[in-house]
Length: 410
Ligand code: ZN
Image 1 (cartoon, rainbow, N blue to C red):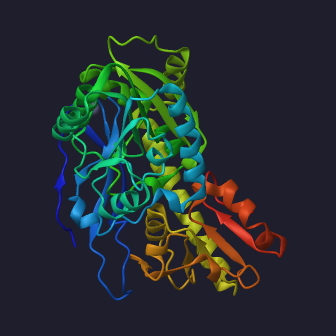
Image 2 (image 1 turned 180 degrees about the vertical axis):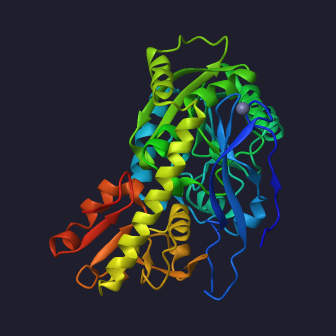
């Protein structure tokens, strides 16, 4: 079924109507709506990626209302060790950058894994519209929470109540925002004149270079390059003063932002990152045409490999059920006949089914290293951590089928 939603006729960043279609993954179920029962119908929505010929921003061509995509937000930061480690490190940085009495606002604060690690001497405010993680944060920590989506109205309300923020953080939320102009204007309104804003997001460069097509899902409406992020921010009177790539979450960028007339001088790393993006051709339509061909090739290769292993009598399970697992299994046509089950550490996912392919999700203790021949590494963004954790599986002859950066068996 086509389902609800509307097409986007103008670029979310610059407003241009010159959007070129670069990739379609056909109709896909919502990657976040896990099924209670495999016979339930999973509504499907077109998943089409477009490139703005004017500002190069890469985005989905459609907005499906959030309530059709997410029944209960199935992601808790604290359920993933690499996420906890990553935010512990970042919390230490923020502790050093702030002093007692400073105000820190975390947009998309989830279950408080970042904000909860900052000292109570800072005024800490979490902005988290998703009910489940907000409740977990309330149980665990004593910082204040705002349960509205972030935009200009929420920003003004937070500013009125807590004053301007010395630090604003937004980790892995910007890709989900549809009203980008309001988001950027809200940050500008909330941030103190000498304040710092940190935005972390997946980097489009890696998505394209590593053919990470399974990072495309309906809730992720934008795929960011520094170039398009800078364009968005400049319209709101903000500027990027630093930026770095990290290996976190299948590779990401973290940028530091201030008011355009703020006290810090942009580092050389900003220019270097922009040059890297330009050298790779992120501003060229041809790059995405080549990318689309690579995606098709990878989908075929993964399908043939996993289905082939199953046909040879091997036991294959999936490892990790993040949103990208739904996309990968559906886009490659790998279903419950080829993959027995998917294991995941998040309790609220266990007992449910991956929509569209009806593969059951089970707790990690059902992953028996002796009984499984191949594990399809669906949570490939934590490849190193998982390979280390499951060393016994590999020692006893088990192998991981790895979809990224290249299809491989390790
Ligand atoms: Zn644009």
